[in-house]
Structures are given as C-alpha cells and as structure tokens.
Length: 419
Ligand code: BGC
Image (cartoon, rainbow, N blue to C red):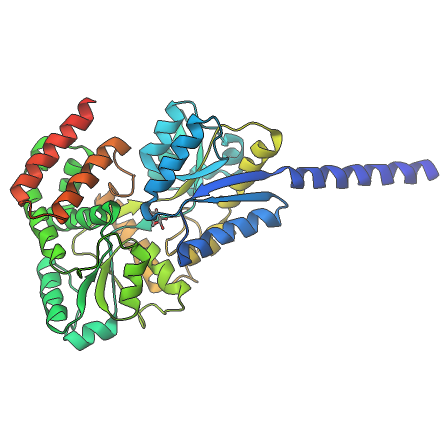
C-alpha cells in the first residue's frame, strides 16, 4: 500500500516536474517592427499568449514602418552568428534566408496542426522551403485601402468615396479648396511605393500589375500604362502637405483621425491605429478600397531561424503552434487591422472593413486579381524592390517626368537582375 502510494507520488512529482520543465523550456527572442500603437497592441497579444504557456519572451523591436530598419538589423545579427529565434519576415525574403541555410523548420508542428488544410495554398507555399514549413503566418493584410475622415469629407462637400482615380482627384481638389490636406502621407520610400503600387493596380489592372511589378517585364515597365501610373502619382504628390517628408505612417493616420487630412492611402495596419485610439469604423473613419479591381496582398509571418539550445528550439515550436491557433489568429487580427491567415476562423466579431477585406479577397482569388505587394516584400527580391523604392521616391521628390521615370525604372530593374 505504502509502496503503491510512494510510487504514485513519485510518478506525479515526475509528471509535474516534466510539465514544468517543458513550460520553462520555451524561450524566444522575437525581432519585429511593430512599434506603433496598434502594432504594439497586436504583438502584445502574442507575447501574452506565449508567456501564458510558461515561455520566456525576449522582445527585440526595431522601429521603422515597413521593416527596412529591422531587415538591416537582422542581417547584422545573422552575420555575427547570433540570429534571433523568430523574425517578422515575408515573401521571397523567407526563401532567400532558407536558401542560405539560415532557418529551422517546424514541420512536426505543422503536421500536428494540419496547416496545409487551413491555409490558402498560395500563402502556405510562401511559408515552406523544400516542402517544410519554416515560417508561420499571422495574418492577411490588404495594401490597397483608403482611409477617410467622414467629417472632413462632409465639410469639403465630398459625398461619396471615390471609385476611380479621376473621382479621387476631384474629391482631393474639393478638400484642398476647403483648406483640408487631401492626402495624409509620410515621405518615406516604402510609403511612396505603397501609393505607387496601389495606383498601378488601379490604372493598369491586376494583369498589368503582375507583368510590371512581379514578372518585371520590360515592355510593361516602359508602357504607356506605366507612364499613366506615374502621372497619377504626380497628382497625388500635389495633394500632400508641405511637411510630409520623413513622416511616420501612423502620424499620417493621426492627421486623418483629427480631420486635418481627408484621406490616407495605406494598408489596413492603419485600421489597427484607428482602433487603438478608440475610433469606430464607419462612424469616426471610413475604409474603402483604392480605385481599381483587385487585392494587393501582404502577409506577416514569423520565420524560425537556426538557433541552438533545446529551450530555443522548444520556444520555436510553442510559438509556431500558438500563432496558428484559431483563438490567437482572432485576437491578434482584431487588434492588428488584418484578417486571419487561417481560412476557418469565423469573422462574426470582426468589423465591416475586415469583412469587406475577406469578401474582396475571395472575389480576387476567384477572378484572378489577387496580386502580391511589391512595396511590402511579397513580390520580388529585396534588391529589386530596392530599385523600385529608390526610383519612386526620387520621382516623388523631384520634377522628374513620367517618361523619364519609366526609362530609369526599367534600366535600374535590368541592372538589379543582372547583378
Ligand atoms: C507590415 C505590417 C506593418 C506595416 C507598417 C508592413 O510591411 O506588413 O505588419 O504594420 O508594415 O510597419
């Protein structure tokens, strides 16, 4: 009897020990660029969930919208032989690091959670290298969104959200006449490129977008359609205020919140910002796709780097499992402004902007008008994206003609491809 009790006690102590050992084992150092109000709230949900599992979270935020500063920091860390455990990373960037042998896979977690059956196949492919998952997606962001202050539009006599670029220009002229900044914008290369790609989709359509910004077809890059796209970008330049240079994107969002500006063209992380400030969609702010047919896709994921030590490898598994849990996908995306990457998370508690995003995503898949974001690193290698950003920013900040812009762009892309 005694022996039995002692054995049972020993078994339960061992069980408790191994459970607590497993809990204490998970450590992650997470490199990300989510530092604005809405972003910090969203990543806070991930930290909270990870710590609730007993894991240790080491936060490595690198401020800078669009993540360019974070990517520079990442390279330095990998070169120094000290990579973070998990990194916010996307698109071809995941494959580039995988090809260098810098990543760990979490295929066992993906098998257990049956990720293949709950992710859109196109997204699942981006997360895999040689058939194994090396990253876990947290969301689907849409880049071709326009945010507006309804009061400001009313004051200026703008009655409807524009559905063509001509209508946009007409609305912007009215705002300007009413003394309201038509377009809140931050002059940083990735923000300029965000405007540019939304305009390319609107002017040229999804097939043209793909040819020019994904396949880098020289004819498309130098076409009249591309000239027209730069013409519209030039119009947009005329609608920003004189202090736009270097402004962070979330400060531009705040201009719309305050009614200083009518519109901002930005992905739906801007919605996270409105929500974090207590603003109510369809009441305090409006969301509307930028003129055009399609959906510019951007998805954040956490990529698992090659680290050593059982606690870190365990941390990667715990993190990957958490990220892909339906509960986490819901709370995270409610804060981030995006929609879940998993296709089976009910959207009942999401707002009208998220529901529209989801409906338009399905329609874009159906009509083959879903395109990957160039500005947000979903479409082309970083070196090629860098050429787009340099040229678009040079155009935005000078009086370069649209004809010169397309010539210079095509030449720069060609050089980048040859290197
Ligand atoms: C990321 C978003 C982020 C935004 C601004 C985008 O590239 O996908 O998650 O909120 O940049 O920093």
